[in-house]
Length: 304
Image 1 (cartoon, one colour):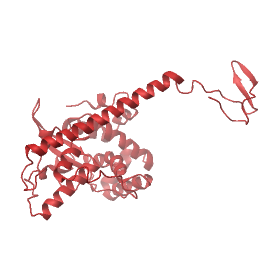
Image 2 (tube, rainbow, N blue to C red):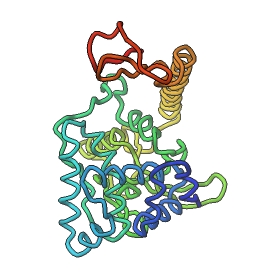
Image 3 (cartoon, rainbow, N blue to C red):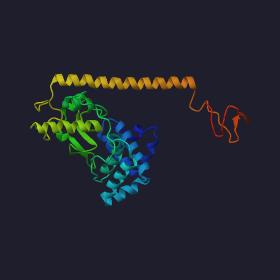
């Protein structure tokens, strides 16, 4: 079990654990999720929901929503409107904390996509043309799932969560929770969540299998080959290579960005270290007094 306080150590959102409803959400996630990152992600997005909707008193909002679930639905729509202009994937990711918080505190909000005017860029189908391979690659990103765990998942293991963090089967849920069996270390039933892009891949994969007359019932494998059976070794090996390549590319980009950032500050100093404030009269502040600043052409400007 994860420790919610440790998962949020050093973060501003840790103060929200003082609220009973947030503490409960974090405790359920700590028990049900293997990855502590879900605690950080969902509490942070709940804090964003609180700020953008003006619901500073989350406990009061929850009490009103328990009396009338439509209060919760309206607050989620208001949150989506506050994010106007953001792509659907961003809206989904930011609303996730509020949806989970409502559900884990007994408010049965619908887990369906919120309105968004802009669609996020999708991965070109030509890049991952095979639906099963596309799902194998995308479902591993951000979920914390191991490939062997993903291959054991059944369609009935997809859905939303009830108040105790148990899975309610619903393959169209958004966010899309996944129930899986952890066999490494201590054996346990866990839950995690798929990204917005991976959810789209799930729906596409299942729809294509239905059109082909293949089984998509609760006991059918989530990832299936063209014959509806579990994917073969060749497909798994190819997906593993692609997934590892994506992870390496992201890691290399992150390392390069951090290195360039460090090099910049080593050359230019800490942020603001070259800032010279300018007094309204057109004189700059230097040392303990004011002196003429002939290099500044207008009052209120600043030099670096």
